[in-house]
Image (cartoon, rainbow, N blue to C red; front, side):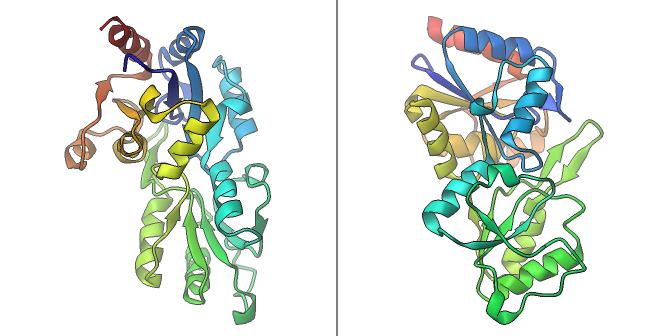
Length: 274
C-alpha cells in the first residue's frame, strides 16, 4: 500500500447508487485526485457509454471525464479486435452502447421477436452478451441458444448476477449467461471484470504496475478478488451490492475492508504513514 500510485474505482455501488452519489464519495474522489494519484473508473455497466457516464458523474460533482472511464463494452471492442477481428456479432444487451463498441460489427436483432431465426448459413460468429433488462426475454435467449448450437462463440461482458438500485437488488445477465452455457455446453469468454485482461488494460491506461495499484469495489468476486488475482491490492466497500453472506461464501478475502468510498483517503493516509 505504501507504493500506491494508481487507484481503480468501480462506479455503481461505490461512487453512486442509481447514479446518485453516495455520501462523501465526491469529496473523497476529489481528495484522491488532488493528492496526485492516478485514477481510473472501471465498470461493468453496459447500459451507458463512457461519455454518458462521465456526463452524469460530472453533473453530480465528480471530477471525471470520459477519458477517466474504462467500461466493459470498450474493453470488449478491444478484445474482439484482437481475438476475432471482423467477427459478426449478435448483441444481447439492455441499453445503447454502440459508441463504445467501436469497430464491432453487430448483425441481426437478438432481442426482437419480429425477426426470424437466422438461417444456418448466416450464423453470427459471436453471441455477445451485455447487461440484462427487458430485452432478455425467451425469444432473445432462445435465438442466442440457436446461434451457439450452430457454432457461434459466446462472449460476455461480465458475469454479474445482480446489481443494486435505489429500490432493491436487480437480476443481471450472469444468471442468464449460466443457463446459455449449460444448455449449449459452451464456456463464455469474459471481457469485463473479473477478467485479468480487463485489469491489465486498466493498468496500461494508467502506466502503473499491479503492485502500485489498488482496486475499490462492492463486488467481492468481480471487483476485489479479480483484482487481487491480477496482483492488485483489493479494497471492499460495505455499500452497493455488498452482502455479508457473499463475503463468507467467497474463495478469498479482501486485502482491506472499509465502510464506504468516503473512508478511502484515510486508509491511504494511514498506509503512507506506516
